[in-house]
Length: 196
Image (cartoon, rainbow, N blue to C red; front, top):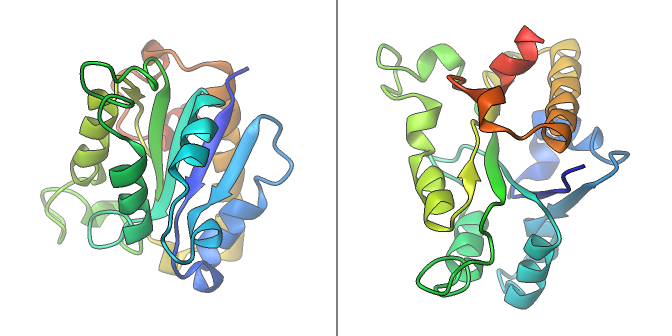
């Protein structure tokens, strides 16, 4: 079974109805480590050696965050800048993350229809996540399609419960099967869950 590290970054977590629903579901999952960056590092002083050790202990890395101005919150960016060091994560001697998998789990206020060429954001979520994909590739990791919860302001409690259950289902799916073939031609992992 693949072990999963969820790096969670939300500077206003207490105000996020959606992320509260998503995170509540993770407490009982075996083989999943939930790591809240803003809880651990409110002063932004990241313990790099601890973070590297966490990465070494897991097979799959999840960047879980709201989409802030088409990217991630600042502490997650700082985590990427500081932890994924040259000659450790990438570069001639950087093999520490080789063969690991990673993906984004994101929440957006805008609906999926707004994230396309015809929508007001003009680009898809996948296009906005290209820097994460390239970071993964540079670090010799396999980047998987994202799992998204979109249009969060319009979701009812019942819909949020459904999305939370899908999140758990997706994590269990990744623990069992992480082959690229299973995700071929898939824009978002949500799509696979809806087919199964």
